[in-house]
Image 1 (tube, rainbow, N blue to C red):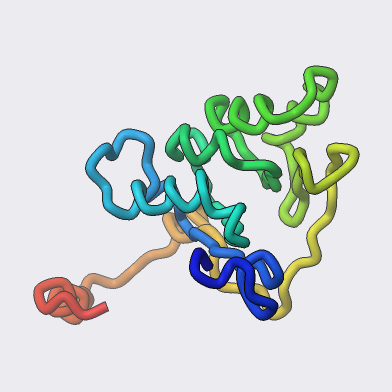
Image 2: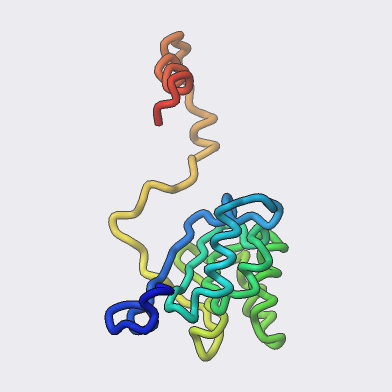
Length: 168
């Protein structure tokens, strides 16, 4: 993007968006010697002038590097129950929107708050759910705990074998 920033087919003429999924695992504010964090921080600080944008996806925004958070222009926040994570979103919203930010812990599946440069008025929105839904739901704890499982010595052999052989 640096070398092609003035070309018709790339750079500022055709911006690129980089997505960082589960960012809290490798862009952590407490990890001072991380090559990935340093590289991404540089992209955040200097990338826009070359046509590079960034999308940070994290369940724990309070664990993300302050350098990166300082460069974020828009937050799309789904349900957040941790007060530290809520404070990150609150810091980007105008002071008179505290009532909107206070909704963060009570948002339903598919609801989000959008705050920042990409939207004129901070808003609560409904995001269309993917169909078929990904299999990422939580286990049904009480139902699972109430179920009886017969004892069998072979139950965990394949799991232990995969663990020992490190096959995912």
